[in-house]
Length: 176
Image (cartoon, rainbow, N blue to C red; front, side, top):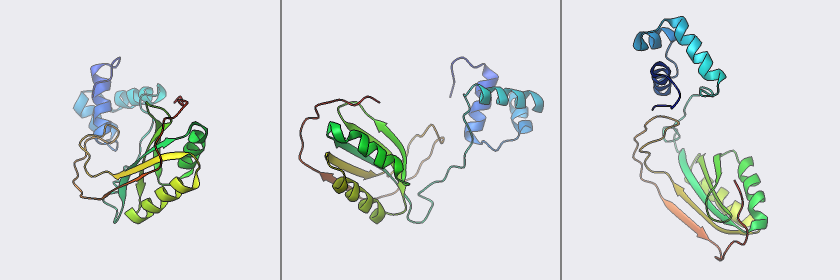
């Protein structure tokens, strides 16, 4: 990964931290040819500027017994868009919510403890919010590239389910 505007050393530091955020300043310094103090100063500047926003333990839901990653694609009536976003935001399983191109379309990404819980959640959302035109969910089977977590190769065979209501054109486009 190369971030425009950063010098070669800072880009290398970011690359190393993306691979292993637990590396010590000394370990990074040995690789990039800088002292521990110089590396610490550079990392602090990267954090202060917002290029590095934080460090986190990455939990692989596939490693948790029964844990599954999923996506939800939802098309709503214009008057229901904000309510659906609010309901998704309140859901503990939902990690990311996007408004996508097209009208009144939401894409969400999450982790469920099992397929039954996801199915119950999706059906409840579909039935309890007026104006949900279509709701489609998929289990993520294989990740080939995930820049937030590095590269993750996993193969899992899981099911796919699709729910659909009456289709129609959405009259108003929601802005992200």
